[in-house]
Image 1: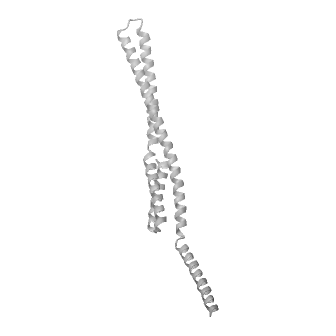
Image 2: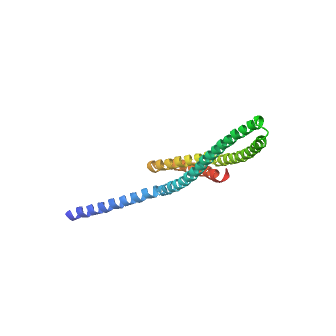
Image 3: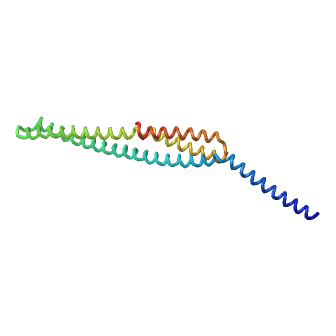
Length: 183
């Protein structure tokens, strides 16, 4: 009889091991989709990093162009003051100083025109770079939320969150592409 109990123990142990293996395989099959969620998170993170890098570049261009435009307008104001002084000299000056004053007035006016054109060009560059900011910001935010939803999906094992993360990821990518290429 002891042999039979030992054999029964071995049989029940083998059966338990087999059931555990089968349960593990079933669980793995049921959760195989989580590998794709992980890959999606990686892809979204890479896309978000690239978008953030490009958004930072456009932001830097906005700041640089604004600084250049401000400097140009300050230079324009300085030339305006010099021109006003030359005009005053032209009105109240002696006949000997009037031709030189008239030349200075003309020169300052030409310089102001050039500086004004340059300042407006810098402002146009600033405005062009600033157009990218809103769609890139929206895209990056959507991508970050998609990553967060995918992470929660991995914890809770809810496929509906995966679908929501996928939708937001596609939306974020669309905004990113729009901000990079279509604005």
